Length: 547
Image (cartoon, rainbow, N blue to C red; front, top):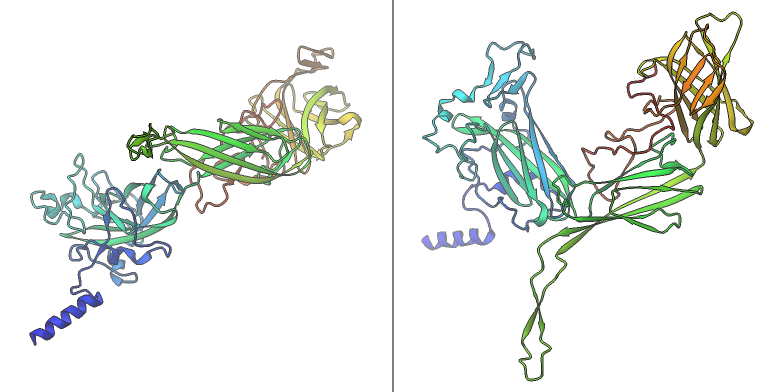
């Protein structure tokens, strides 16, 4: 019989079946493993193999759908939100952030306890007890002399609280067949260096436990895909003044297009790198190389052009070890003698790419005020004035012209008039506009066609009817009968919907195009402020609006 037991034991070992029910981290955390992830991985700094044993007595394991999840938290379920600053360039750091979202009316206070928000009503009404979980007064956790239960699932002890701040949640991060344990509050972050990570999409899983007497219970699980790439993540904004639609990749001939390159590098991995930008604008103007992330280019022909950008970064890195080479010394020397040849470059080159197909068309290039005339009309109220504005423009013939009249500060709109453009010979058009009494007005003219939009702003000072000025032009000041016009530099950001189609991408004012081939979008990208303006004489301010 004893021999039979030995044979059965040997067969169990040979078949790979476990002799005990001890769980390992991979059994608990590996349920959502990405299909492309293998078991062979390089060691991540500070992480441990998920082959380690899991203390299921201290940290119970619940499968999805287990009824105990519904009672894991007072007042409802806790939701975990996992984000990262993916995509990450190979060699850089990627950071993951987990935020816990508590049921309605609950929050974490300065002590790490969970309390009810004041004057907040949930489905149960106002709670007489201010605490959801008052862990600060927990006698079990308050006794630091007995730390036998203060341990992670793999048996490692908790770190001592930093400045007395105790974490009441245990976070277990899992990726690449390895795990990382962290004690924290309702928000934690973890960073990984990507040098030893596999290229391509990867999965990060996080399981969160909370304190429960002398043990812990799970409250939330979350996972997200992140991307590690050996290509620099490149994003480009394109902007052109007078371009009516900044999202259709159609631009105007004979006006410069402003390009701004944004490299997604949240961990500043490329801060000490020499970066070159190599532009090919696709119009046979050759290759343009610069070390500046901004550039501009003017297309002089209509048509469709393929734009290509290559970003090259020389990343400082450790020099390669000396390479042994055979000695070429005099005859008789040892033929196996080796000399040391070192690599003097000590740089790793990384590249990023951007491609776009853009269309160049004709459009309205410029608009100016040529003349302003006071119109005398019988029956007009004495305090009102009529003015004829003669505008000259360059480029295509506009189909519509709009006038916006605002107060002297250009903050409050008083009148908006839009009408078909009645263009005379020599690219001239005349508009008659009314002003309610003497004073200073901020006036904006907008000329548009299907593809372009040109702006012009002025300050107009209209004296009372008992004052007259002879018509003359001097030093940039146009004086017409009863009307003083001064053209001054201003900023116009007023674009009403019928004149400026705009598809916002993040907070960008330009045309943002994501680099092709990446599977993750940049979450926090700020559009550049270009030196070019939307008009020749901008005056209207940001707060100006159309009623």
